[in-house]
Image (cartoon, rainbow, N blue to C red; front, side, top):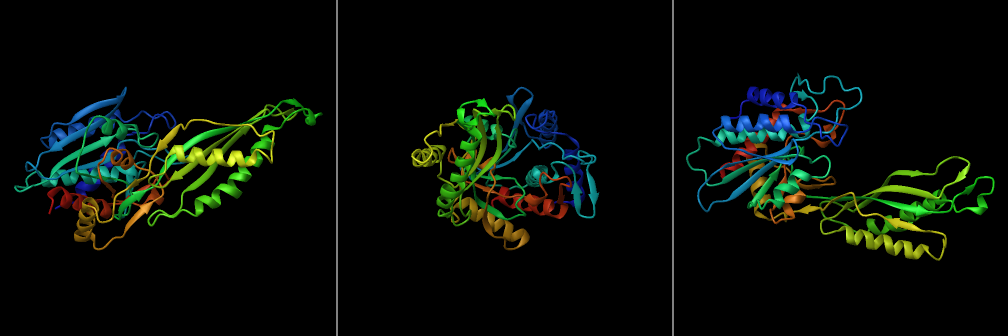
Length: 381
């Protein structure tokens, strides 16, 4: 039996330990939280492995053996959070208001972490446990997925994985990938009193952005995935020019492209090159550089009739009734695990709408239910 009081206490302890990704505003990183988790796991009689992926930024991995030859399931959640929001009061002071527990990371994704720990504790005394359970808590998900990449590259394998993220206890069988990169137009500088002597890189970029909207987006809209809809493209930042009285010779945009499972950067780049080729005759001064991505993660998909999806769906049904199998537009560590052949679902307490907000919270009852769902999966019943 998973007790609400224990869930509140453990989740509060996790929220109290700042684990802001240091690439997102200079946080302290995941080290203190990793040490807490390692000590908690030792208290359960386990022998965790703590591995620095970057200095002071570790992954934590522990294993609960099951029957020889039985199923091996991984339960994974990320250690890091985003920075506190502007105006967020006491982001690392957990506050319970009714059934809601507030604090940075409470929803994304320390609620899943707490539920996994409570489920592992609950199965320790089970006599007939056919499933071998691994618990992995990975650094760096909020910027680059480095912890999950490291785990996958280490040779770790399992028959399936449950990745904890706020899904409202729905079983997520697919999510989009992402690629982010820069594109630069190059012009020719001149005095603004004689702009005809120069080539305005900002003006060229305006034409390129318009072409992306008018020509490429409709093509993307024609592609449909049954759980994820269409891929998307967004221009998120633009920089260019030196002074108001200088014709700008450079302009750069940052782009975010959400990938359907199976799409790759090579394919995205090919589409861009085709678009640029079509614009060459219309805008002979257009010179564009496509930079290599600074962030890339593929989409993830598990067949809805696969073993991990069916197991998760049944465990959720037993604890909380019927929930949909669905897809989500954001990325998770599951993509790194799926890339090395580990079938994944994403499943956890909380709702993505509460993540990363000034008033981030999770419903404690969902944490308790998530722990019970994870317990069912760990027991293999």
